[in-house]
Length: 274
Image (cartoon, rainbow, N blue to C red; front, top):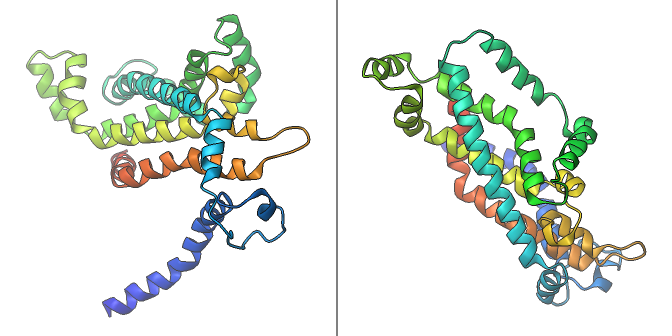
């Protein structure tokens, strides 16, 4: 019976849903407590009064206005460069035959296996030599270089599924590879492009490690780094940490809810076609 099967699926999903949503609910509840209630040793108690003032204090103390502005600039730069680099590279590796094409692709795939922490020292020295330390330009270039292997893999997988007959027909009409990419492939690759944009934006917005290494001055730091301002050597203002964390992840949650269908379509189509 269909209703019985749906009921069993619902029952099976309840524990996993509770495990996933539990920390978020606890964080939101804790962000509305006073410092005394947080330190009372009863983490699952509800607050006596909803302290919405915590969000105002976190915004003002952490200078979240400038932090969000820096994060938006960071995300916009990374997304734009990822599209400019990964889309043509994915097309070339999928549809243009040239000597060593497979080895070039394997080289990018090898980049997926190297954690950014393993190359952070030479990366820092390179950025320092270019005068890009403590600048949003430097952290954008570092994040793009770290994300390019996956972006090329995603776009190449999608482009491989586009019939070669379309490419051949465009060549017969005298179109160049650039024209084929812009006029034929890009209109067909909307799901993959949207998936690339969403993944790049989410990972950049949440990135803590690279901005921590590259960005030194508070004026150029991004939103995740702003949470550190609520902690000092001797004390930590947990009510501001919790409310600041909610402010940080709320745009990401909203973006994912609004785009989850397109995000899933882009990944599954690329995987099936690749």
